[in-house]
Image (tube, rainbow, N blue to C red; front, side, top):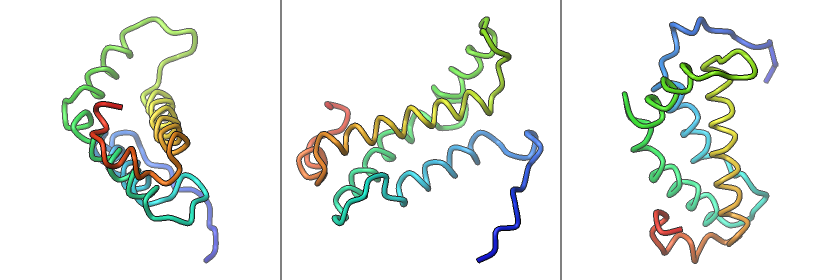
Length: 115
């Protein structure tokens, strides 16, 4: 495979739903921790299932971004930067769960909304 660089898209071309789908696809299919078990990937998939309802069209996250864009910020507010921060926090949250139980077994058997 040859790396030919990056492709930049106009922000009008990529909807929030497309960006959410792309991020969640990677989060559920790419192991976040160096683990030899598939249970950690299973836990990541369960986390994605719990997160998805908040990312629906005109859902909680989209409304939160709309409100955040009207607030005063130290730096200029941009949706891509806000999404990048949001995705980083989501990833860290899933990593924290994996660190609590590296095998993912005890967390996977409970309802994640209780964690």
